Image (cartoon, rainbow, N blue to C red; front, side, top):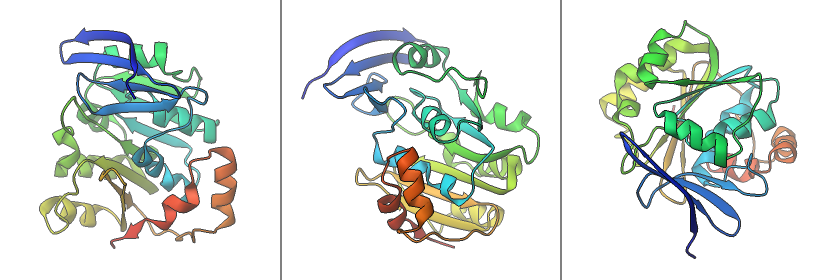
Length: 245
């Protein structure tokens, strides 16, 4: 089904389109790839399966501070603030135009608990103090590919440094990195546990935990409670998570 383009703008990095469909609204960067997708009636509800899966670490302990790398339409921030209204959410977005579009068309939350920094995620991480965030959600993409930053060992090292002792890192990859390669060796060296989720659209979400954690059964009452607060099918998603270490 074709959508209706309701907004288009350009900046130095390319175009940003907002497209409305019957039920959904999409942000895309001059490409076939959807950068963000929301339910127009419930904009706090992520639509993409990988976006929903990225939130799963919130089930292992309620974070008090979350860092979102790559704002897009603000789907992750909106979901987190709906689920955990007392949580401090800090997003880092490279493009001011993306932030403006998110505010105007994607119901970006207006909350004292929500802040946005415009700049490069590498700089933001490098300037952040040690052990100051409980969850990092990284979903950095341009029009046709993932940001190379997400596959760099220095990026993993900085994420590990900034996370609290019980913190989690959640990264969306379009292709699964080599499990036996240097990137995964860096992850294993920095984190106590690694988990993986493969979406039906072939995105891979990697979860890395700084400390030990209690695995949750798919029928755990906690997941049932989370489903009532944010209905993204927590139980079904958790059942598909694979533990690597």
